[in-house]
Length: 174
Image (cartoon, rainbow, N blue to C red; front, side):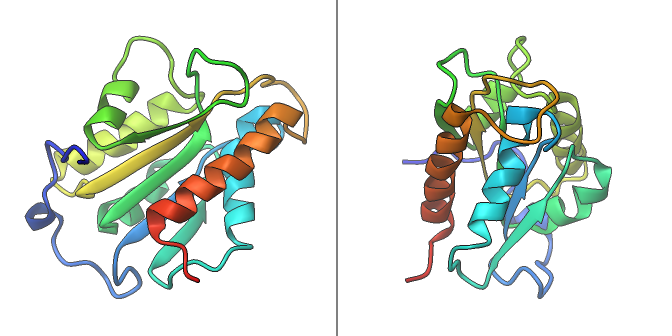
Protein backbone atom coordinates (compact mmCIF):
# COMPACT_ATOMS: atom_id res chain seq x y z
CA UNK A 1 0.00 0.00 0.00
CA UNK A 2 1.35 3.41 -0.94
CA UNK A 3 1.41 6.16 1.67
CA UNK A 4 -0.87 9.08 0.90
CA UNK A 5 0.17 12.69 0.69
CA UNK A 6 -0.40 14.65 3.87
CA UNK A 7 -1.09 17.91 2.02
CA UNK A 8 -2.56 18.56 -1.39
CA UNK A 9 -5.45 16.17 -1.80
CA UNK A 10 -7.10 15.72 -5.19
CA UNK A 11 -9.83 18.13 -4.10
CA UNK A 12 -7.20 20.82 -3.44
CA UNK A 13 -5.53 20.65 -6.84
CA UNK A 14 -8.39 22.15 -8.85
CA UNK A 15 -9.09 21.11 -12.40
CA UNK A 16 -6.41 19.40 -14.46
CA UNK A 17 -5.74 21.19 -17.78
CA UNK A 18 -6.35 19.23 -20.98
CA UNK A 19 -2.63 18.87 -21.69
CA UNK A 20 -2.47 16.64 -18.59
CA UNK A 21 -5.55 14.42 -19.07
CA UNK A 22 -4.33 12.00 -16.44
CA UNK A 23 -1.82 14.41 -14.99
CA UNK A 24 1.47 12.49 -15.11
CA UNK A 25 4.54 14.73 -15.19
CA UNK A 26 8.07 13.29 -15.16
CA UNK A 27 10.84 15.83 -14.55
CA UNK A 28 14.51 15.00 -14.93
CA UNK A 29 16.78 17.29 -12.94
CA UNK A 30 20.49 17.79 -13.40
CA UNK A 31 23.40 19.39 -15.17
CA UNK A 32 24.83 17.37 -18.06
CA UNK A 33 28.16 19.19 -17.68
CA UNK A 34 28.72 17.81 -14.18
CA UNK A 35 29.10 14.09 -14.88
CA UNK A 36 26.72 12.02 -12.77
CA UNK A 37 24.70 15.11 -11.84
CA UNK A 38 23.11 14.80 -15.29
CA UNK A 39 21.50 11.44 -14.41
CA UNK A 40 17.97 12.88 -14.36
CA UNK A 41 18.41 14.49 -17.77
CA UNK A 42 19.83 11.27 -19.23
CA UNK A 43 16.81 9.39 -17.86
CA UNK A 44 14.41 11.79 -19.61
CA UNK A 45 16.32 11.36 -22.89
CA UNK A 46 16.05 7.56 -22.61
CA UNK A 47 12.37 7.71 -21.61
CA UNK A 48 11.69 9.63 -24.83
CA UNK A 49 12.74 6.48 -26.68
CA UNK A 50 10.02 4.43 -24.96
CA UNK A 51 6.36 4.12 -25.81
CA UNK A 52 4.61 5.75 -22.87
CA UNK A 53 0.91 6.51 -22.36
CA UNK A 54 -0.33 9.76 -23.90
CA UNK A 55 -0.97 11.28 -20.47
CA UNK A 56 2.77 11.27 -19.61
CA UNK A 57 4.65 14.54 -20.06
CA UNK A 58 8.47 14.32 -20.00
CA UNK A 59 10.33 17.48 -18.99
CA UNK A 60 14.05 18.25 -18.96
CA UNK A 61 14.04 20.33 -15.79
CA UNK A 62 17.70 21.29 -16.01
CA UNK A 63 18.81 22.53 -12.63
CA UNK A 64 15.16 23.23 -11.69
CA UNK A 65 13.50 26.56 -11.12
CA UNK A 66 10.19 28.11 -10.19
CA UNK A 67 9.31 28.21 -13.90
CA UNK A 68 8.20 24.58 -13.46
CA UNK A 69 5.84 25.38 -10.57
CA UNK A 70 2.70 25.66 -12.71
CA UNK A 71 3.39 22.33 -14.41
CA UNK A 72 4.03 20.69 -11.02
CA UNK A 73 0.80 22.12 -9.62
CA UNK A 74 -1.23 20.92 -12.61
CA UNK A 75 0.07 17.37 -12.39
CA UNK A 76 -1.95 14.64 -10.76
CA UNK A 77 1.13 12.42 -10.49
CA UNK A 78 4.61 13.95 -10.30
CA UNK A 79 7.79 11.92 -10.76
CA UNK A 80 11.21 13.48 -10.21
CA UNK A 81 14.42 11.73 -11.29
CA UNK A 82 17.71 13.14 -10.04
CA UNK A 83 21.16 12.32 -8.72
CA UNK A 84 20.80 12.08 -4.94
CA UNK A 85 22.99 11.35 -1.94
CA UNK A 86 21.64 7.96 -0.84
CA UNK A 87 24.62 6.98 1.34
CA UNK A 88 25.00 3.96 -0.95
CA UNK A 89 27.29 2.55 -3.60
CA UNK A 90 27.52 4.65 -6.78
CA UNK A 91 24.81 3.63 -9.20
CA UNK A 92 22.32 2.64 -6.50
CA UNK A 93 18.75 3.53 -7.49
CA UNK A 94 16.04 4.16 -4.92
CA UNK A 95 12.36 4.99 -5.29
CA UNK A 96 10.68 7.30 -2.77
CA UNK A 97 6.91 7.80 -2.89
CA UNK A 98 4.69 10.37 -1.21
CA UNK A 99 5.44 10.60 2.55
CA UNK A 100 8.66 8.63 2.10
CA UNK A 101 9.83 11.26 -0.41
CA UNK A 102 8.90 14.03 2.02
CA UNK A 103 10.91 12.32 4.76
CA UNK A 104 13.91 11.83 2.50
CA UNK A 105 13.95 15.44 1.30
CA UNK A 106 13.48 16.86 4.78
CA UNK A 107 16.43 15.05 6.36
CA UNK A 108 19.37 17.11 7.55
CA UNK A 109 21.78 15.61 5.01
CA UNK A 110 21.86 17.03 1.49
CA UNK A 111 19.79 14.44 -0.44
CA UNK A 112 20.07 16.10 -3.84
CA UNK A 113 22.46 18.45 -5.56
CA UNK A 114 19.33 20.50 -6.32
CA UNK A 115 17.70 20.00 -2.93
CA UNK A 116 16.99 23.66 -2.18
CA UNK A 117 15.25 24.33 -5.49
CA UNK A 118 13.28 21.08 -5.39
CA UNK A 119 12.17 21.73 -1.83
CA UNK A 120 11.29 25.32 -2.73
CA UNK A 121 9.12 24.24 -5.67
CA UNK A 122 7.35 21.53 -3.66
CA UNK A 123 6.87 23.86 -0.69
CA UNK A 124 5.39 26.54 -2.95
CA UNK A 125 2.95 24.00 -4.41
CA UNK A 126 1.93 22.93 -0.90
CA UNK A 127 1.50 26.50 0.32
CA UNK A 128 -0.77 27.16 -2.64
CA UNK A 129 -2.64 23.91 -1.80
CA UNK A 130 -1.84 22.50 -5.25
CA UNK A 131 0.64 19.76 -4.47
CA UNK A 132 0.00 16.73 -6.71
CA UNK A 133 -1.87 14.01 -4.78
CA UNK A 134 0.71 11.43 -5.92
CA UNK A 135 4.40 12.07 -6.21
CA UNK A 136 7.62 10.12 -6.33
CA UNK A 137 11.35 10.60 -6.66
CA UNK A 138 13.78 8.20 -8.27
CA UNK A 139 17.20 8.96 -6.81
CA UNK A 140 20.49 7.76 -8.29
CA UNK A 141 23.64 7.71 -6.15
CA UNK A 142 26.36 9.62 -8.06
CA UNK A 143 30.04 8.73 -8.18
CA UNK A 144 31.46 11.80 -9.87
CA UNK A 145 29.95 15.28 -9.82
CA UNK A 146 32.74 17.17 -11.59
CA UNK A 147 33.26 18.68 -15.03
CA UNK A 148 32.39 15.93 -17.47
CA UNK A 149 29.77 15.58 -20.18
CA UNK A 150 29.31 11.84 -19.56
CA UNK A 151 28.17 9.93 -16.50
CA UNK A 152 30.30 7.28 -14.81
CA UNK A 153 29.74 3.68 -15.93
CA UNK A 154 27.89 2.88 -12.68
CA UNK A 155 25.48 5.79 -13.08
CA UNK A 156 25.02 5.19 -16.81
CA UNK A 157 23.82 1.66 -15.98
CA UNK A 158 21.70 2.99 -13.11
CA UNK A 159 19.93 5.40 -15.47
CA UNK A 160 18.62 2.38 -17.39
CA UNK A 161 17.29 0.91 -14.14
CA UNK A 162 15.69 4.23 -13.22
CA UNK A 163 14.02 4.42 -16.65
CA UNK A 164 12.46 0.98 -16.13
CA UNK A 165 11.17 1.98 -12.68
CA UNK A 166 9.66 5.18 -14.06
CA UNK A 167 8.11 3.40 -17.05
CA UNK A 168 6.44 0.96 -14.66
CA UNK A 169 5.25 3.81 -12.40
CA UNK A 170 3.61 5.71 -15.23
CA UNK A 171 2.17 2.64 -16.93
CA UNK A 172 4.34 2.01 -19.94
CA UNK A 173 2.21 1.32 -23.02
CA UNK A 174 2.57 -2.03 -24.77
